[in-house]
Image (tube, rainbow, N blue to C red; front, side, top):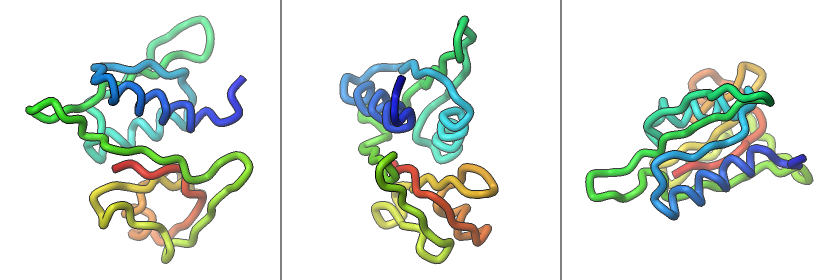
Length: 131
């Protein structure tokens, strides 16, 4: 059993980007699916889909690269950890890399990017940064 499944997801994506893999398989959950959906909307990954298996399912993420084979994702950082949660209000939601990256925040209205949190005026727990 994993103590931090979101950190595991980010590590799997980071490792796949480092070896220039086309796809990465991750054990699925509702939260991981929402994070993948947000990464797709923001243009960090090409696609994602759920594959059925006899357990919880597998989330297959197709990574995105530029024409000269550089990864669109240059960094991933987990912020809230099981031992130390980081909460912010809507006025203090962090801006990542001057707006180039996004911070993913879990709120009472669901998982949102930093821009959406500021627009909706809602805060929550900062899960990770992606740039």
